Length: 354
Ligand SMILES: *Cc1c(COP(=O)(O)O)cnc(C)c1O
Image (cartoon, rainbow, N blue to C red; front, side, top):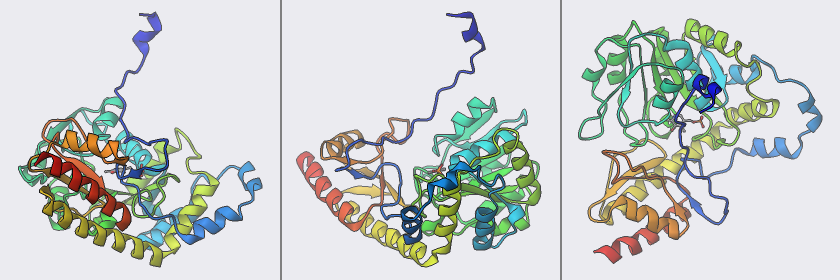
């Protein structure tokens, strides 16, 4: 071992879902939106003058921040934007989780939380979901250095009512509570209105799922002016220019096209419910989902086997070989056509085993 290796910050990185090189696959493994970005985005790119890129972007991201504030019915001072919600969450961990007390999050949740905690040396404790994969309020009443969980939770899709979340926020006024709402637009109710009541609440959302812009990388946080100011101070101590000029414009266009947003999210919700019924008739048990994916296990065929068999048929879903969820698959909701192909493949796979 070289001497310098002693001084290396060693981390076990997050593993994102596979991005297959082939294009003729059905990709239901990373919760991307199957529908293209709004028409305005297409037009912008067709007419884009690349001279624009010689200048630095607006470090305050003013236009995008204003557009988000308008849609969310908050003030621009309540909005922080970053390079996808991963960047925003990472900044929030770095800014708010400086206590010696452990932060709390569920045992089964977004698998980036423990990675950020490790990279920033934040102590943490995980709290097991109950038998039905629900977050138990009583687990979040002990002294802590902060709380974070997604609503709906990932990879389960299980949604918690905002009245229940409010009880957790109310009981934790001494630490910052982060609600990661990556999937809130698929049928849930947002906690954003609660920011006026609780100055320690930070709500994080993204353009990656419901706005069809995973490739653009836009995420944002909404919270009290105080919280947002603290986060901005950290951001401006690391990198002033996070979002590029093109992303800033694309984000505004996505927010302006309310009709398209409503149409595509509603479509995904109806495809989800239809797919759930079909999966159940094939012997799958599906958790109630308020997201753009379904978390399912089969009564007789193992998830690992189904995962491999689907892959052979060029259908990608997500599988984790982890305690408690190693017999589940997370299936992203695609178009109706993609889901029909999935169902056909699954009919074959489970028939072989029965
Ligand atoms: C997808 C996802 C994110 C990150 O999304 P970005 O693409 O970085 O905006 C954050 N949290 C959860 C729970 C997610 O599923």
